[in-house]
Length: 190
Ligand code: SIN
Image (tube, protein in one colour):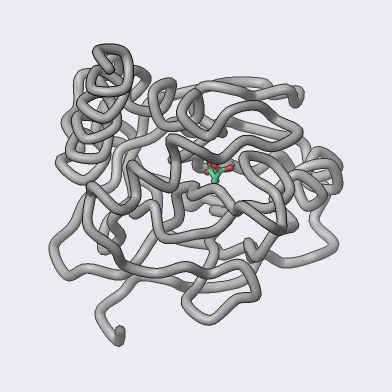
């Protein structure tokens, strides 16, 4: 964990615009005001469907699974960076309330320039944490879960499409997507 570039929490009283890095639903569903939007990545973190969702893509009885970040040496997580006004964070805090914390980390734009960004991250042990499981187990859970923001499968498929649209691969997301599509193909045939 010591090599993981979690750094500073954001100075709380600044009124300057800041970069927000999105790696999950924040890539494909904004719903907030931003001044600029650029493909970017963060280092030392990998995207994992290890966070439970009982407020967006599942319920308390049948939680869905959504993306969070876990530390991994040498990993690069591709996503989208948005330049936002600080007051946008109040709405995002509500949207990301199910276990996510604000963390500041170094940000690498696809054009080679750098800055720092705020990231919403759900760390191990939070109240909605589900943890590691196989791609098939995750796909099975996703296939049956739905919540106020819609079916959990849509979250997965929209995220997988968005990562491809940005020109990147994510083996973890693709493995779950393939497992889900295979499950759905079997259901359709029966
Ligand atoms: C993010 O997209 O950056 C956070 C996780 C999510 O809202 O799916």
